[in-house]
Image (cartoon, rainbow, N blue to C red; front, side):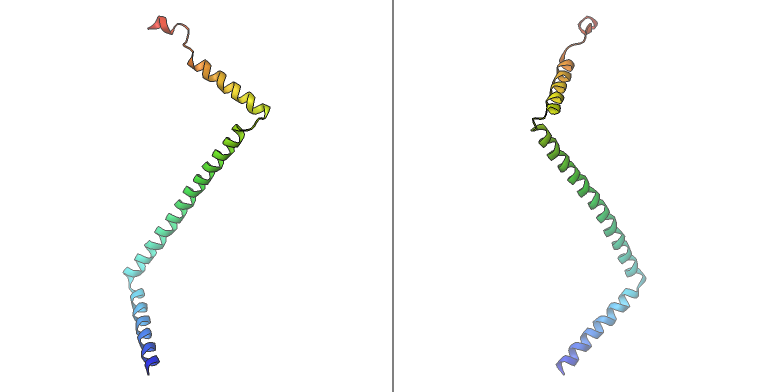
Length: 97
């Protein structure tokens, strides 16, 4: 008799759930939740992809900077030359003041 009562209890819960799911408002809420979850998943995927691309770029630049390849040394010298050029005052800038 106990198992029959438990079965009836679950049957009534199932029937109540079916009736609730048939209500228009509940269906609309579930549809809105599904859309929200899908949009959130897409945004999370793009943010995670951008984060992974940034970390990969960071590791790659650190590895290249630690390299002793002649091309890296030439790029360093070029960057230093540009920095020195930028720090120099322009001709005539003192006269214009």
